[in-house]
Amino acid sequence: MINEIISMNGYGSYVWSAFSFTLISFGSLYLVIKLQLLKEQKRFFYKLDSLSAQKIRVAKKQNINREILLNNFNSQI
Amino acid sequence: MKYFEPNKIFFTISKAQKYVLFLFIVVLSIGLTEALILSPEDYKQSDSVRIMYVHVPSAWISIGIFSLIAFLSISIFIFKNKNFSLIAKSLAPSGFVFNIIALVTGSMWGKPTWGTWWAWDARITAMLILALFYFMYLLSWRIFENKERAIKITSFIAILGAINVPIIKFSVDWWSTLHQSSSINILSKTTIHASMLIPLVIMTAAFALFSLLIFLMKYNTELIKIKNKGLDRL
Image (cartoon, rainbow over all chains, first blue to last red; front, top):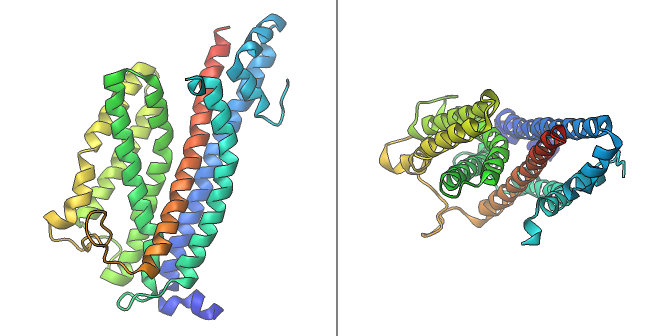
């Protein structure tokens, strides 16, 4: 049964390569986009930290900034 | 209208990501079981037909995403809404990757069925041209620093590339090609058996969920980039 699934009547190398390529592409794209997202989140926190206390208060008043902070594991609020 | 406020959109897409990821893993697992184990082999192509379950959904989704990008690009010129450009920009990476998957898996299917890895067949060539349009679109976002200019140039590329979409669709009818004419039709009778149609539909759903997930993550990233620029101006 397992040998049949692996060999696929002699087409195994083509079938498994096609499915592997697809899944590897998915994994790579997910990783690249996730890293970009984390990088921007990190930059957001770094910039927020570098502001004066008054500017931080102004920034935190904006709802979307609060959402960015709340949606990160390193939430500062 | 309060649901369309930036913070509401941000909240929704941030929360939606994990549910879409979970659903994608479930649907993909069912799809892979159906495609690789449960679905029957073809009487002519034998087990090589299973490549169809990754090749066809990838091609459909890459064409669908490019059509959507072109539609959004036209809307940018009409409505002058910059959010459309953000949506179009966030859709492009998954569309490009699906285009590459369709070309590569098509090549892997071509070798055992046609006896060659590559042929300058009308549909394959049109898909390669689509990949070049995707590449130019993504490259333009990186090259042009001026945002207004980048929006105009990328929209122009998308609208120009949209001419290629009907060529891909009808190439098998207009020219004598290695590709067979379509087996799945919305308006007329579908000629593919249910035992093969079901895994194909499940895999298409899984791939659509993946492109949705990538879109949400990329759109989220773009929104944070805008907020980072906002912090600079404080």
